[in-house]
Length: 360
Ligand code: NCD
Image (tube, rainbow, N blue to C red; front, side, top):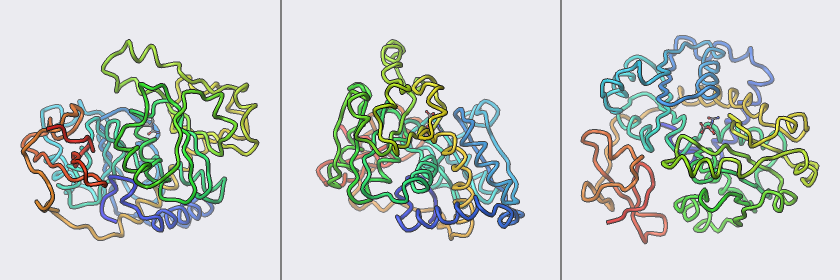
């Protein structure tokens, strides 16, 4: 393991290993209290966060390590116009491991290419959020003892919800998974997720716009917040914001052993009354995130890191076209190469940073 940018950077075996370590940490926390003595974790959060940043910081402190952090982009040199590449080079000298959240899709990938310490993506725009997936997977495994043979409902903002994208990528590698994708059509799952992780992998899925109709079939219900900050049009957000609200009535139609997950923060998509239902596991899920992050930090600090990775030019299109996604890091970072690589089915090209398909 070098950097964790995409959840698929971890093999299925590595994921299981992290779950086993996290379980041991949860049971025997004191055993791990000196594992990261004299090590420093840097957290660079250029977007709001409570859980992810604090759980990383708490994780490092519980391992006996120390933390340095940027929690507000206005107080760092990013506000002066420093590039992601330069920031990563500098932070590499001050810490042993780095965690980055950024509003631009692909920013942590760019940082990792300029870092000689391990880097963890803590959320890049509406793209990916692999460490939330670690919390999700731990909670699923703890409660279901398997990742195969599950019907997984994902409900809400499947377009901008980066946790949804990473969770689909992770679960699509297991056997007999069926996804029920519940969203208004405006917030449906992006094409690159649908093609690469579902269609080409022959993973069964249905799209639905009704939580009421779908809930009875589910083993897992993953609720999400409508991602207000990603909308270009606030009117559209206001129209869609109350699309789905999970309440006690809907829970009556769910299986007795269905579990409800949510990456949090919740706005109003789950009624507070559902919190006392034994199937509501989202607060436990947030707690589990810290144990998985502890396991991840231990593993990554013990891995070898390859420095200055160069992209080979083979099969790639360099600097001939610009990415059409205005939230892509490649169109705002100075002098960054635009790079497009073939999609899995080899019929098209996609941006290496944000996965948007190339429009010539
Ligand atoms: C999520 C995120 O930041 O994408 N939160 C988190 O990290 N737990 C989900 C969200 O903000 O809705």
